[in-house]
Image 1 (cartoon, chains in turn purple, brown):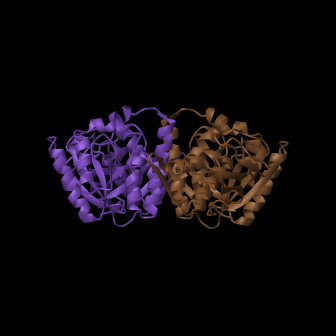
Image 2 (cartoon, rainbow over the protein chains, first blue to last red):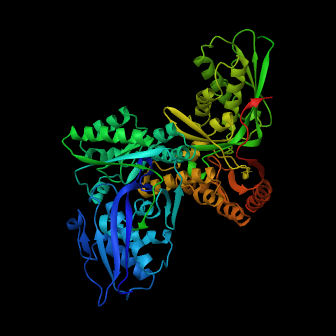
Length: 312
Length: 312
């Protein structure tokens, strides 16, 4: 395999999705990281070759790099620890953005490695190894970014032990407008401020909203989707980490968003919208609102049934 | 209206439905309470006329009777406080059974009163008044029994304030086997033992299960329905109040139940089953298991799209 190489692209993702704290996520069309796996001669390289606009911001050390850790977990599980695979990561997604940057690297890495070795596992079976990449990046091996980045579409993580991940088909006319203001929030910091115990009344409300959100999605009830996307667990704490959050939220609703929330652990936010044109308008309004707080931002408009990781 | 009278029947219900603690419930085919409303001359009677097998077990005093309280809340809201309506309640459902006995009385009562007064409100609009009946019966104005008893079918209570109740169509082949062992559990006692704060990890799991349960229902995925019906909030506490709970649960699964849980606050239990014949078999096995703990029981097999309150 000495001269062969494989390159995979994995999309950015929105995790949490309001009421789906730690259990829901969806793939975005557009930007993502790329990983190239090649067969090297000699002993395994200790470093990842880093390129792309954000390539110099994460550790090249294979044992500290989400792509490296994910690939090595995969090699170990498939009994290929003696194989020398070199990894090149084109880091296109900003770090600490709330758009699943580390998950994208891990997903692309395990997908490319699996392809390189003749697809020994299904894409779904790659999720646990990509989760190991998440563990090194942010401290917890959560699946709500890596699962949609690998599989595409909207995913519900019913259980972590055993891992039980369900793909949920969304209405084709449901779009998200994701806006990333140019500040960085570390997932580990955003986790630290969360409460450890939740009052029963809030548990019931969160549970009701997550159930109702699924009903809204599956019955294409846009009003219900909007009413139920509310989060009681993370947003009430994390919104204070995002400058201008309330104004941005209001701008989204005033311009016709049906729902709004923090993407992942922030600072990116997402608005759910009916139709691509509407989502594009709303994204512009959200960007304007962030600008009112001195923050430049990027936006990304995407349907909720976008594809997952693939070869390029 | 002096000589007119109206009689309504309201079915028993299963509330909580495992993962749907305080937010889900469904109507049962079969047994239920009946309420007759008639126009009396003279001043409003202070007592309810009580009949039926359990008629002598609840207070006849209108102000303490769930049917009386529900009707009076309805009369007040519709500006009919000066009307003299007499109420007769045929109490067919056992008290403290976990099958929505008090909700059935309240639902039949408000439905009959509304019909008697020319249907000033829709059936859905009657829910808050029936909830007032629940408040006097068990201390909290919960909707997960009265909503399915009034509207029929499977209901998801997304929000209590404002009240937001969503009907969810279930697979026609999904059946419940409800078994009522002959002991009484007061809802207020069963509520007292619950925790007030829930660890974040359990909140996430409960939320994931309730969301996944809705996906299972709407995509007719029986395996998923079974995996996700688990309850982490009430069952781990309340199962100790039901003699032989673990053995009964095992009997249900060994005879092919796809899911199992406590009906309402117990002591009744429900098994979810595929097909009516299977449900009938499983009901018999559950009865046998209770008998092993010295408890006689009744059983009721029903689809999950059964009708709600209606005139008789």
